[in-house]
Length: 432
DNA sequence: CATGCCGGGAA
DNA sequence: TTCCCGGCATG
Image 1 (cartoon, rainbow, N blue to C red):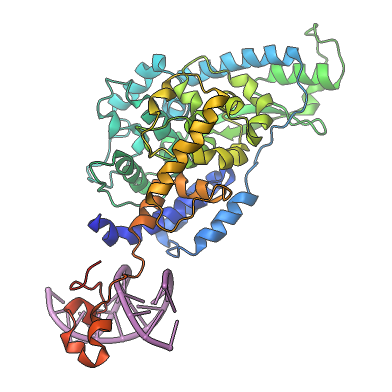
Image 2 (image 1 turned 180 degrees about the vertical axis):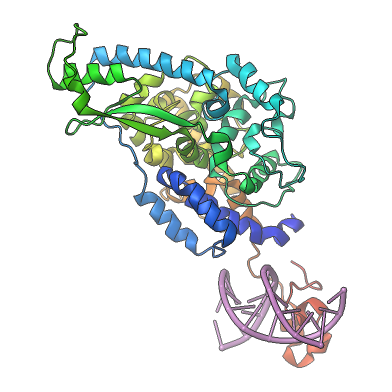
């Protein structure tokens, strides 16, 4: 803890950065920002508020709204989902993290790790690697199990990374640890690993329809049947559909980013909340990807249950932004609570209550002054989003209550002050 | 405005 | 290192 104070400044920065990244959109800008930051960073915590606001406004680089959805679409989605999964499994390097496809795939990603693609730099704390690569907790890659939650989270958070962190985290608090590690990465920003993280999707350009599908065929079919009113059963196409959809490239990173930001870090404890976001991770292969697109909206608002399901892998559910805002709180991980549950798919609505509890409690624990008022949903995400932030707030010295030399002895007796006080440093004599 | 201190900088 | 101080944050 003490050292935290010392490094609190760093943490501060980190927080700011991470905060700034909470939005998907920003995720895109992330790298840029990061780069910029490396040169000149924004030390000012005050910016947080701005960032926060900004973040709210932002998001939705891609909308995936679609009111309607036919059964057919559903099927299609299934297919799509399958494809997506396939692709994911194929390129573990990029996807595995965020998606954490499944344990089954664990092998693949594991290999990855072993491959040492991202061997952490020797730099101790600052290892310029992605934490997600898991050097840290995956140190025992051999055992994917524990990680389950941890893993999932990791990948996600990676992107959010932003700062440099004080490496040391209380041994007792792994979450912090992880976080720090990841945060340090700075140097090897996301790009490195994710270069291939682009995912191609097809978005329907039809007015008021933002449907996004992962396959051209799918989108064409969608257009044909939904918009052109053609008989769906026939695959026949005159190619006209081509005019109504566009190919879009999604940066899975960004998505992950957004998610990551949400998902706090406690690896060990993803618990319920994550479900909403990470569920995909926790829920192995079967999570339905496709649906997500359509479901997307619902989740946003609230159905935790729904959320957990749809949100899963929604790689392109970018506007999960809002979603997570709401859910994020849940994700607060720190609490150990039901982390275990993450593994299972079951997040019944009933649990929702438990959720909130779990996530809330943590904050409560720490927040000295942070108000964990239920209504201030917006805050939570923020706080939660980055543990370091927590730590920051926690560690942040808020003017020692106790009187310090200056006050005790007064300016006139300055010579009686402890040296620290004389030097305008933290008082050593009357420590709080 | 008074305090407490961080981040820098000069000696 | 030691000693100071600008300047920010907080109350």
